[in-house]
Image 1: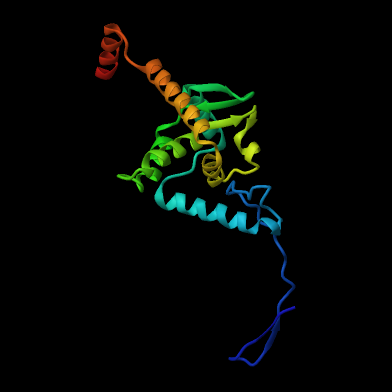
Image 2: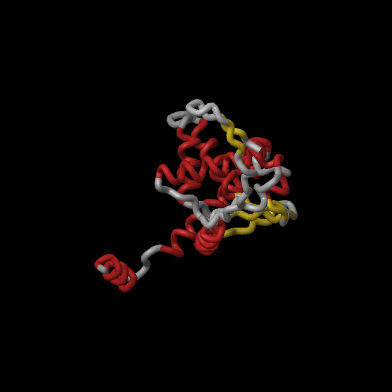
Length: 197
């Protein structure tokens, strides 16, 4: 029970017990369940809130998981894949996105003007293109999702095998280009009309 003393009248006042009130949170915000009441996820929670704060400041919000999945489905639909049988194993390649190709070129550009450039470019492209070996996803095959492990695999493969896989990659790239190329005059006119709209 709190007590108050008046300096003017030199009297002491006793205040009644204070009531405890609960005020509901009507903001609609709730901490995600996987972050609530779990001290092990403190770092994840901090990262979550920092990203949210950064998104609010920059005005750029991250895509929801559903949006990412839809984009991946659309991108996957546009990708070309090719299977190659080598020594009884099936190697599966897929065409690269513009971003993946750009990353490969930027990584290889540090060797521009040297003999090493063509080898590095081949290594960078194949590291991004190979998606499975022997029917096993590349991440499972390597027991790692680290991209450097993919690069190391390319360094450890036989040169003749790399050349064969790269030739198949080039064939797949050409097929992909032909698939989306304008082949007839009617296709060209249709494209021009679409651009005018």
